[in-house]
Length: 250
Image (tube, rainbow, N blue to C red; front, top):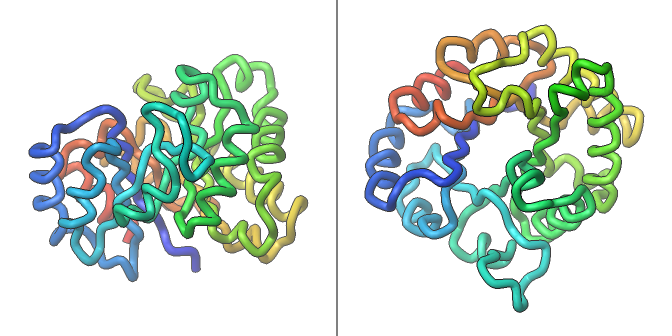
């Protein structure tokens, strides 16, 4: 059995006080970490505040990082810094980072390796545009992303990676992939891992779905055999909504 993950990506939202109110509201209400891995990806400026107050069942993650440990890169944070504040996860390759900050798959590959080397779990985001979906190029796009994004990851280390399939056309648009489309695509990702690495690794790697997931539709996705949880945006900002999403994973 693959342990499900419910991950909330706050993006550029919540002040320190708002974030702490959220943490206090969910700490005792989310499932045991033995049942569900619950992660909140918060702005870097408040990571330490949240780590200090996370309950036994909650973990905190960073939203991005640089692949080097230090250097003249104004505004960036390194895997070493993330580890030092106690955060244990980091998003990599989110479509907003790729689109707005010109992150390439080569950049993503370096970040994935750097995070693994520092004992931080990378959640690797991949996904296709609406045009790619409508022209039948989804598998080609995902195959190319995975080929490059994981090129620096050994078979032994791949089990440390979590993959999040987020169709770009379903992020923040209100549109969602149908459960059938989401499952079909996540199954393709698992089959790609089996072919490129081996079946044992593929059977163990966890694949999340993300894209306008909310309490009213989350069950439709997590019941699918190749979907091991969700990466949620807007619906993770409200404590009650997030608690409901986490409990759905039990």
